[in-house]
Length: 471
Image (cartoon, rainbow, N blue to C red; front, side, top):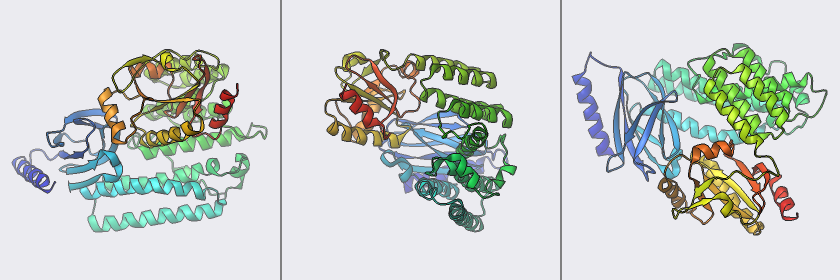
């Protein structure tokens, strides 16, 4: 890697001297992938493809971005992705092992300090979220003290970094936004995560100034419109505002996430607060598909779909939503599961009905959701021992070739006779309305749907299995 780094820096220096005063608006990205799943990486900016970059014989690459638009870029490899901050004249090198994608990722070269800062913050954030879930059970005043302390530590860390490394204004703006959006999100999630069932009472117990920061929220921030932390915060904020609106006409009924009026309130709040078409359409789509995919009441689904269609300007999203809703209506309990084709890892194709010979659980995985990929395998391994009379199968839904999927399974020692891949992921995912990836089907021996919207990790899941066994 040191030799590789030296060559790239020399190349970068030569090109920089050659192009001095001609073009300073460029950046280089290069690196090495250990245990690659494919022979390329995909580079994107704001969800738009920049290029597909091939790895060489040593699984390394180097790429120059001309006419650089400074900001976050994403690189994807083998179904996983991470963000990098690129600014003019950066020459950033990365090194990662696909088996531990985020944890193994390190940066070197020009631009390494800011990107190592961000990847370390990302990994720390993942650990921190587990802690936040625990302290959400505290009373509001104590909870505020804890999250204020977390914010103060992060702010101090950022200030020390800025003093030492003198980063750009762009870095400082994004790094500070990370801290702020996380802090705001922790406040917005409090009523939902707190164990108390009476969410209205929890809202009423909050200190008067608990949500004062809302006065300064920009719901149409074009700069952060593609930024994960901003989008995650807006989703939590909209959900919380809808809870407050719902509480006014819920007649003291217990709060339920699947309540139609609550979900309509979320769409109405987005419509009233957000004018930026990109942000608005994305939020509307997120909440509409979240509701439709988890609800089996056809009449309620039609009401919510109509509200979504009236508010969204995204014609492509509307078509997809109507198709998904139609698929959901066909996946009712008592209906036959739609026919689709899967491929086993000996390259044999099977109609799904030919595999279902007894009561069966069908779940799905994608490498884009790495934690679920691992956790679902372990959960099924446990359930197989407890319920030998049930067949458990897992199906990969990613839109890449069979060998790539097989490599991922073999790298984790997950290959088994009950692992398959969708032959036509696009059409199958639509007909099965696979959203989210945690969606699990329970089907009886006659291919009849018992449940089209279960979850392996739900506390009700084993009760559903026992109900099927005891029929």
